[in-house]
Amino acid sequence: MSTSYIIVGYPDVPRPEAAAVLAQCEAALRAQGWIEGDDDRASAHAPKGPAYRPGPASGIVTTSHPLPDGTVIKPINGVVFCGPRYMNYGPFAIMPNFHCPTCGVAMDGDNESDIAMAQQELCFGLFSEYFKSEDPSRDVPCAVCGAMVDVNALVDDGAPTFILSEVAVEFWQWPPDTVDAAAAVLDAALGRTHLQGWIKV
Image 1 (cartoon, one colour):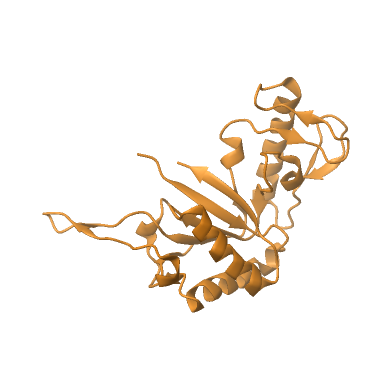
Image 2 (cartoon, rainbow, N blue to C red):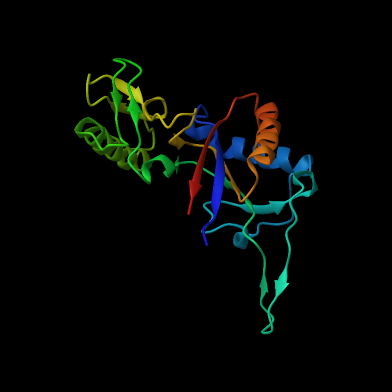
């Protein structure tokens, strides 16, 4: 059985501000009843930050299933606050399509074109540097024209998304319209506009 999560990201937040912005995100969702309780690591698979169960504003109920041995099972439905150094690897589960905003060339990942394969390798090199660097760049060279392009603007999965961000909030097993409503709360609290991604695991 698979599970999935939707990610709300704010790639315009600089790394030194990530911790404070994540605290704002948590405070905004908690104040309006979107999350509740203490850090619950069982509410997501291998959470990369503090994880909380949905609150009453979400309309999502966390049920408990006691087993004969005393173990209590709850569903995966947490909200995880992640950052800094966050990667939305969803588009790279299968080679993504790329579109260079500088030269306009579309690189066909669906058919694993040579150009798309070369671009993916350049992206992998960027990811390594991004996670090692204290002052990271998200810029990667276009495999066609050589222009340095923010990887978040290069990956073309058909909708505005992000790949790398210092601030991300994962919503595990939440309906898309519910995530949209929670993201609107975050946008209002931060005075920023989010980008979205999703991953199926």
